Image (cartoon, rainbow, N blue to C red; front, side):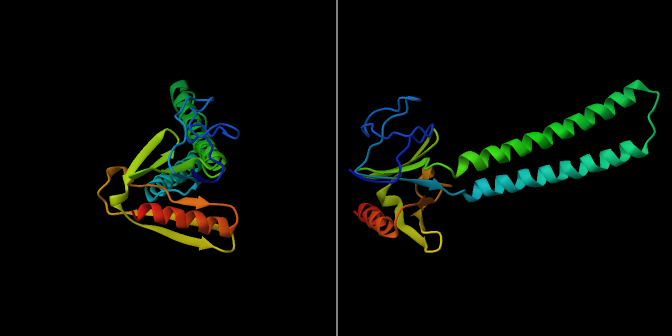
Length: 200
């Protein structure tokens, strides 16, 4: 087996150092790592995920503007003796603040867990590539792979690898690109192995 990267458990991120590749993860029970060539790296966001993040950001911007307007309105409007009106204003302000805090925590969690671990693992088997990230698996047959696209960043000293498919595999929709780390010579060597496997 040819390997590259840390090869953590894709499902939970457990560092599998010292474990046989075929053994299940002792932390979460996910299946072991298989394939003749196995590569792990940090995933990049798919276009679908980026669009979702932009929508969430726009949503939180709208909520922030609403909270500002609500605060101005609250300060400009004298307190009413009507208890129901006062309760409604308080509930609205609390709801807006809770949504803003939830959005901030979500973005913080994504930044902490998203690109900090090599949670994306590509397993090159006999006839397909299995892409594993979190609990998701996508299997892309070699016949469906048009090329292995490579972009080398000499400044950051990493390589961005993308599987360009012919659109025949439903599992290939929205696959993340993989960021390879390590020395540039090792990165080139593993890219060569990947290209040889997909050209069979």
